[in-house]
Structures are given as C-alpha cells and as structure tokens.
Amino acid sequence: MAVIHHTDLKPTKLELLANWLPSRPWYRGETGVPELAKAGGFRLDDPQGEVGIEFIVVTDTSGPDQTAYLVPLTYRGAPLEGAENALVGTMEHGVLGPRWAYDGCHDPVLPTQLLALIEGRALAQDQNISDRPDREIICHHTGEGPNSMDFTTPVVDNRESTELSAPLGRTLRVQRVLRPVQGGPPLLAPEATGGVTGSWIMPDGSRARGLFAVLHTSSPT
Image (tube, rainbow, N blue to C red; front, side, top):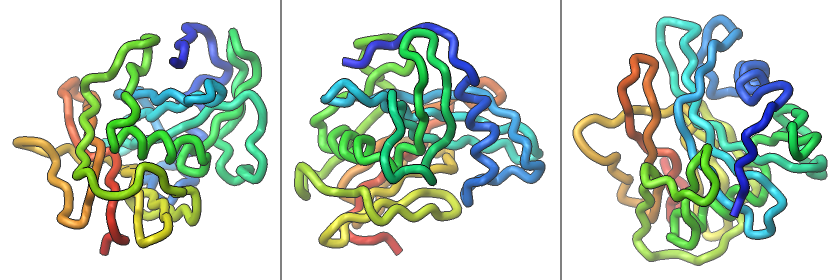
C-alpha cells in the first residue's frame, strides 16, 4: 500500500506540468502558457513499494476552449535508466527527498499495473488518502486476453491519446484529452476487451465522466 505524505513539493506537480505539457503533441493550448488546476485522478500501488503511480487530471483554462488532460505519472527515488526523454522533471519531497517524475506511459511499472486494474487484479486508490479505494474509478473487462503483457514498446503519442503496443496486436490506449460523456457510461468499441472510466471536476464546478483508458484486442482504426 502506498503511503500518502502530506508535505511540500518543490516545484509542485502543477508547476512541473505547466512547463512540460506544451511540449506534448496532444496539448491543445494556444498560448503555450497553461493555467492549470488539479481536477481529479487516482493512484495505483506498486507491488514492490518503490515507485509512486498517479493518474492526475488537470484542466487548462488559458484559452477559450477549456481542456481536461489525463497525465499518468510515476515517481522514483533515482533516475530510470533509458527514460531520459520521458522525464517530466525533478522535485524535492519534504519526506522522501529528491524525486524523479516520469511520463508514466514510458515507465514499465505503470502499464503493468494499469492492465492489472482493468483485469480486476488491482484496485484504484484515492489520490489523497492512504489505503482508501477510489470508487469513482470503474473498470470494464470481458475476461478475454492474458493476465500479463508487455505494453512498454512501442509508445506512440497521438493527438488525443497515447498508444502502447504489445504482441498479438494488442493495444493499451491511454486517453490524454478527456471527453465528457453525457447521459450514461462511456461505450467501449466492439474490439475493446476492457477499459477504465473516471470522473473529474470541470472549471465550472460540475462533475464530468469519461474514458481514461481502453484495452484493444487489435490495433484500433
């Protein structure tokens, strides 16, 4: 179980993301200077207890089109070898000391645990309170497919999502630009064998729900 430390971070996560987001192909802002607010998210536990895993939802209100982004992050106590291009930044944690924050889609620990979440082998944890499941995170799974799969390469960033491929044509798609769904739970495509939906707070204070991640049996078209 991950322990949530309520302490100072320098720089803060939002400060790190404000510098990093404009470099992403899925960033929609026009000014290049995001105005970010934390809007939701959840955590996953690393079975080894070494890597922090967090899915953060942030909203950017810098332009006329207010956009919500899903940013999976991993936090490590030392640099991850070979992941220099995935480094979001470094922080000084008031309890744990120096922390290296990575785009979690490029960190092998996060896709493994995301797949476990989809298949019901892991629980989403509250973003701010230790040992409290997050009931807002709902997982769908057909029961088909393997219980383990290497989704670490290749990793492709698209205009709205990041796709992680594995053998046998399987694809794990992490939604980056979040789309609120009205009138019911988001529907999965016919080729999808699983997915994760969650909620976040819109800039006007209302709550939205949409797809966070989708597991496909073959590469989506």
